[in-house]
Length: 397
Image (tube, rainbow, N blue to C red; front, side, top):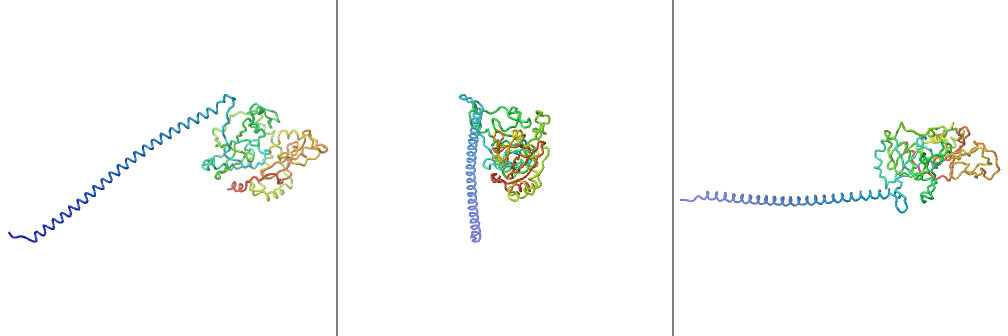
C-alpha cells in the first residue's frame, strides 16, 4: 500500500498540538492546585492567628475585670476606713479635696459682697477651671441650664487657722450673729454664715455663657479669688420647693434694705475719669453700667452688725484714714471709740464707708433713715488688678 505523506504530516501536527495543549492544561492545573494549596495554608494561618487573638482578648478582659474588682474593693475599703473613726484618737480622717477652679469676681473684698445670691443681678464673675483637672468637654451641655449650683471654700474666713488645730482647741462657736436679727445669735447650722466647722459654701448663679474652660456668671455673691470645689446644674423640678418652711426672721427683708441710693452731682464725671484709666480691665462695658452695679449693691445695707451699732453716738474728732480692709473709716477707731484726736460729736452722715468693686473704691455714707449718699470714687494704689481684661467683651458676645 502506498503511503500518504500529507496525511502523516497532518497527523503529526495534530499530535503536536494535542501534546502542547495537554502540557498547557497540566501546567494550568498544577498552578491552580498550587494556588489552592497556598490559599488553604494562608487560611489555616489566619484562623490560627484569629484564635490566638481571641484567646488573648479573653485573657485581657478577664485580667481587666479582675483589676476592676480589685480596684472597687480597694476603694470601698478606703471609704470604709475614712468613714470610721480611728480607734487611737477617735478622729475622722479628712477627705482629700482640692479646688478645680477659681472665681474672678467684681467684688474685690468681702465687704460689699452680697449676703445671698441673685439679689444683685449685675454682679458678675467668671469661673475659670484648671484645664489639667477639668477638660473643656466637661462643660458641654451646661449652657442648656439657666443656673448652676456652686460649691466653694470660704477662703477668706478668719477662722481657717482653727482647722489645723486639735478639735479640743479649735473652739468653733456653736452660735453666730445674724444680721437680720440685728446681731442676735442662732445655731451656725441654721444660718449660711462662713464661720463653720467646715468652711464650705453653697450658692446659685445665673449661667451667662461658656467660653472654653470658663463659665461666665451673674447674680453672684462670691468674692474674687474664691476656690471652687464643684458645680452642678440647677434643676427647677426638684431644687425649687414651693412649700418649704423657713423661720420668720429669714423673710424680713426690710431689715437690710435701704431707703434710697443717691449719687453726688460730680460722681458720674469722676467715675468716667477713673474709667478712662481702669475701664479696660473691667467686667462692665461702660461707667454707666458700673454705676448701676454700685446702686444695686448699695440698695442693701452691706455694713456689718458691729458697724451699724457703732454708727450712732460715737465721739470722734477727725475721720480721714482708710481701713486696711477697705470697709469703713470706723475701723480706724480705738476700742473706746477714740482715734487719738480731740473728741467731737459724730453725725451718722459724717461716717465714710468704702465699697471696692474691681479697682474702684467708692466712698459713701448712710443716714439714720437708711438713705445712702454716694460721694466719690477713686482708684487706690493698694487695690490689686483683678486681671479681668477682655471679660466685658466676653459678656457682650
